Length: 424
Image (cartoon, rainbow, N blue to C red; front, side, top):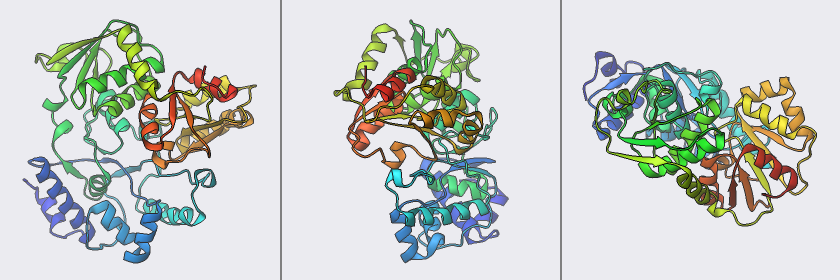
């Protein structure tokens, strides 16, 4: 790889052993990818903290949080000191549990205390403790063309496709190295050519609701896998929740990291702009039959009508979605045999608290949770066998992760299930 003088200086130890270990990781990573150089970045989203019993035990036997950071964030068998500060703006993604409701998630007080030490360490380094899979909802909104280093599939596809920023789907190690060096390998979606559409989707039915967009994304991802689709024939311009659920579904059923919506997304003012003038490899139509087949496929794990748990907030709910849920719940009561957990960033919960939405939801018997989700935490209310969801992503993952039955539908249908205890 070609390295600048600045990058060579970091590699050779000018800024200490921790930065040198970070640069060594990036060089090895870039060489494995076939990248010819590194690209500067000033925007990183990753996972820095430690919140598992395994990491707690590793810290106790291998050398504290320094050892945890060296091994799990920098892939370094040699223990290097924790960095004093990060080099670029860095946001923290979601955790393995909600530290405000550990008992509900089966997390011990010892793990909560270990996590608190880890979070304090990350904050001292200058990491923004957003603790969400949707940093773009709470202050990290990269600009078009900005090179980023982000984890989290639903966030990667959102900033690539909706905002026109540039990132590949990174991991804990590469984002940690990026936050200490301000560099990431220059390959994939950092380059122009891989961002151009390769496959086309023509819509023949209206796609309007959040449920509609989730179904379209799930169908599209299952077809194109890790290629770049372009969609045309849109009616209404989708808002943030619709685009969020669309991308999350596409990156779950497939490996989509970027898409184009003609006339909506930044690099697709026209179909020709999305493709760069190249012919599409294949074009398929999405209509009533495709929608129905996708709906049946997502709901294939649903059998029993009694619902034990309604999970909303994957990706994390926006304030608009919490407002909608509060409207649907006001004056009603969650069924005695059903739990309702709504997941959102801490910052958005604070806004929900001030607006009175948290009170409405809690008075109805629901709960607003933060920092994690049931897929990340592997935690659901005790005795959960049947889950209702308005997220195609979670309907894809939870049955595989936890062995539960899952029903997918609209937010209104999920709230009705929470209040009646049944999927109708």
